[in-house]
Image (cartoon, rainbow, N blue to C red):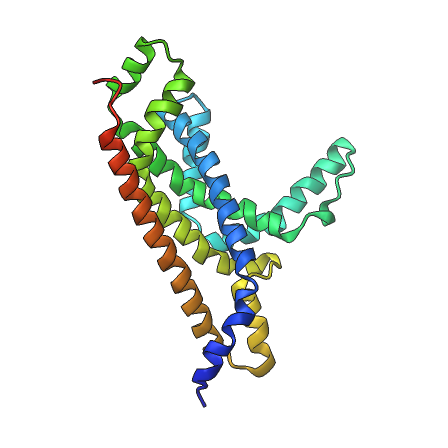
Length: 238
């Protein structure tokens, strides 16, 4: 019979693994922002050859399931490193790589393909006169990006980037294929003891819903604050 009480009594046991889930999501998100920003800059500057590689990377990543990408990373990266060891005589310990590393790499690369489009669109939405005005008063290009362009682009990109972070938190439920025990994997293990899988998945659904709801509220608050700050701050071009 369906056990309602079990849904709530299992929450503390599952919550023990919430820090692992959040660590994977936040580190992957940070990595995706860095990679996505570099890809966006390459696309905007239309760097020869590199931009073509970037476009293929984005198309391939967005056109294949994240689960497949996790498998490719988990099984493919050790093969590449082993081949490098044989080719160059290095002794890198492939077996010593922690499983979480494969999950972080796969999720970072996957999310970066989507983030790069959001970042590129946000940067291109900023008035070009802002960059020209910044350069005219003696700022370098990196200074102009850091002080003028990126703060304005962040306001535009934040909603989509926030959705990406929420998607990453939910996407961590797939990293069990790389032998990482996060919340979903822990829930499966706990359910295997009494075969109460339905109750356990309801427990997981409640936890994921609460975490993402809290994060959504925080992101909406942050977006409002950024928009207020943008309206109060004078533009360079003005």
